Amino acid sequence: MEELYIGVDLGGTKILAGIFDSDHHCLASEKTKTNQEDGYDAVCGQIVETIHAAAELAGIDPAKVNGAGIGAPGSISSDESRVLFAPNLGWRDAPLKADLEAELGCPVWLGNDCNVAATGIHRLELEAKPNDMVSIFLGTGIGAGIITNGVFLTGATRAAGEVGHMVLDPDGPVCGCGTRGCFEALASRTAIFNKVKSAVNDGAKTLLMDAGDDSVTRIRSGKLRRAIEAGDELAAAVLGETCLYTGVAIANLCNLLNPEVVALGGGLIEQLQADMLPKIRDAALERIMPGARQVRIMATALGDAAGITGAAILAHDHT
Amino acid sequence: MEELYIGVDLGGTKILAGIFDSDHHCLASEKTKTNQEDGYDAVCGQIVETIHAAAELAGIDPAKVNGAGIGAPGSISSDESRVLFAPNLGWRDAPLKADLEAELGCPVWLGNDCNVAATGIHRLELEAKPNDMVSIFLGTGIGAGIITNGVFLTGATRAAGEVGHMVLDPDGPVCGCGTRGCFEALASRTAIFNKVKSAVNDGAKTLLMDAGDDSVTRIRSGKLRRAIEAGDELAAAVLGETCLYTGVAIANLCNLLNPEVVALGGGLIEQLQADMLPKIRDAALERIMPGARQVRIMATALGDAAGITGAAILAHDHT
Image (cartoon, rainbow over all chains, first blue to last red; front, side, top):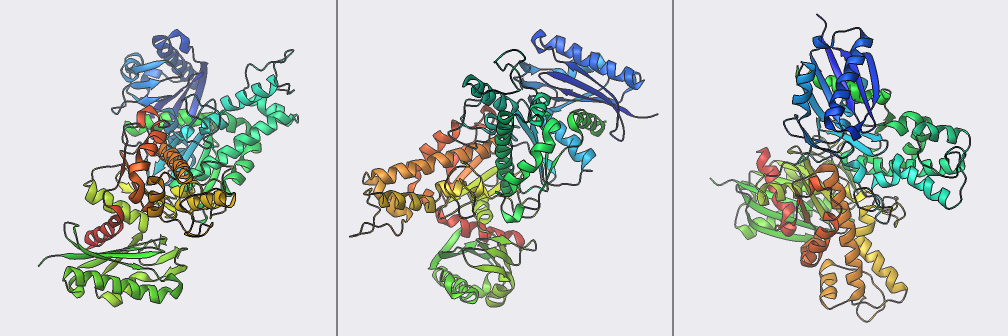
């Protein structure tokens, strides 16, 4: 009988669930908006519903899957059973493994969302070849999964990989973490939003303003792409800064870790890679030491399926 | 019969050699100024002479040692036999292992100077306990040895660990590598010298000026310490900046690698740790994410013996 695995990418704004075969190929997937304001139990219910919807699309009985993997946006306990802290979901010490196993009737494994998405890229897209690799995800925030000497870097207290909180300008804007000039405060979609809002408050005009209004309340990556395609100068300038700082961050990581591959993902890259990737590469290569300059800087072809793919691989590896 | 090992720390300005027992304790050591301008053969001769002088001090016959380890300031070939590139010595592809084995009559092993010094700190001072550790050496330049998951981080092409070329301010001063705002261009003794020279050119007065002259041609770490102890404001301000950037660099490394220990060494730390360490810790802890904040930030008690100790351990491990 064919082996089947569930992969879930749990985010603060959306839940993705996919059904995968044992070759890590996706048979069907489904997406839901996360109602995180309804609390932990409601979000658990949403995860189960999204999985069931994906199973229906794939034409399979969800009771017959071999296991489920979940990437969650936060720190995971060392026994991989609990979400210790997920600020975007408002969760602390949530027993997600046990609760989902009770609902799904199959074994469930948890991982950090960035490490799980990095697993998807490493194992499926790069065939597990790189021994040293960094995956960076650029979206509302900035996260990463780092592989050194063939294994994921976890650090002494499972807190490694906080690429988004690498300081790139000690006099830069204040980050959500309180420090000035973190990579995330300079180059995430949140940073882009703050820069555009500030320019608009200063009288700048941009296609990123809300329709019929001179304010900016939200900038999705697709809207940013369309504004740049339409020649919007503010959008292009702000995205250019994002590319510069992303290149500097990549150079720092290459000089420290000397990876074979730097893989980029996340909403910004998915929508804007044609524009961003050449600029990011230029800014990085200018700053990478000669000995580490052979690095391949790429955008993942998996797009937002990297997370569910890696989650299904997590389940496959454990069963 | 007692086992004996030679440890050599080969630098651009000085050569240190020590004789060690099998517990990694130093029986005697000797120091020579490196005459690197005389070329490779002359420096090889100096290494041998320095070893012989140390052996004489220890009262041992250099022909009876079990092996020698050498930390060299550059990149080492993957078979650990050749110094591929050592800019401070002007060496390219130097067959140091074979040449020294011929002279010394015992097996010789090479390592990168920062990794070798980090080995000394890790194995002797910290009893090999930390599984994740960063050692940073602040001197004329800035180097590091990084251990993750219990092993030295080498990267895909043995180019990892270039902590000195982590960009901390993209608009900062130009580094020797050509990039703006590298940690080394902001916080090394070279950076301190450049800042003091520039301030003196602008009319500042400081105890760091040459005797009977208004110029600054050289600043050794000891002179800097004495100037600060005497209340020199320029010296204190410039050293304060060094501490700030060192703290930022440590925070970045802690957020990325989540080490148990950050050990600091090098000439600046050896001379100025009482003044620097509290400032460095404050600047770092302010920026380290809560999950990684348990890190121990320390100055090595081995001082400039870290390199020869690690080199002797390298020889001990291989024999």
